[in-house]
Length: 447
Image (tube, rainbow, N blue to C red; front, side):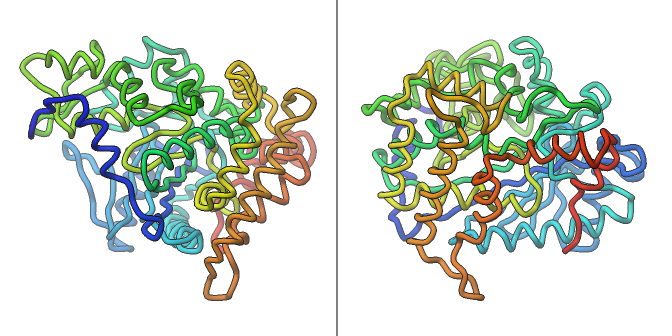
């Protein structure tokens, strides 16, 4: 592995990823929490009906290729798709880069059919929620993956809720391309500015440890108590002069987690990447593979790699899962819509952004901002995305454009509601605070 000799190589790596408009794609990552139906407990990794058994069923019945680490089955691959596991056994599908949201929706639908087919044999359910609703964090088994043996103890030192983030939460994430540095910074600035609004619109984690937790997106709040060095909103992004250099400077000063050498992880939590780059560590020197790994351990609301990752949304019910990539594509893949989206939030001060960010976790779309609510902003945001998708005119085989994947979210937002509002209303009403009724209602079902 070639050693990095100059810091500008790190910036060049971002520049190399620019693509012409016709090559832009959308990728989606879908995380899901699983439970045992009879106990409502989070799935363990091991055991007769644990996560490993689910993966083995997918291998035997649906031609997935197993991926192992130290003899443990920790993931699957099939073509351009991958199934990976989060620290608490949450199952994630990493979809292929798709031309349109019709493709994204098709891959997710196939994944759910396969997953449920296997899970039902074990009396296991997967939930359209952003957090485990019943099991407490100390009741959830750690995934036997080497990197978590380093990350877990470190998170206990730098935040109070890091283990909850790792073991209880689930998200849906959209990934998009950029044309060049100017385009990347415009997308980064706009979506970082909209992060409180997006988080509020997708808030879906109001019940945990068996009862309401006081938040619409407890998952979002958990991230604010995980690690201040690597999470949240990045103030420099809102400068009109922000460049790849500024993102590199930010990433260089974040403490590292680890590097990989000869198949083994080495604990690097004592130093920043800047120090590693300048001085090395215990005979090891920084490579581009180390830099790429380090970037995956940064957790801002929008993350820059050789594509952009949007990380503000709780995991959703199946009908709302495609809404996030649809929203991001609609906002970001039409220049006029990207500009209109920035206009919604460009006048906010950073203090106002931070207030809105925290309030969105607690109050969702009802959070107040100046003379209006985040729900008011969300309505305009979704309308802009709708227009963007209509302009892009990517049609399904049935002749429908991509706005069909935004409709469920638009209907909710027009009522001033996020998914958590619906859950809490049912919890106090028809569910009669019965967790099993919440689970039955939230379980993924075969179409």
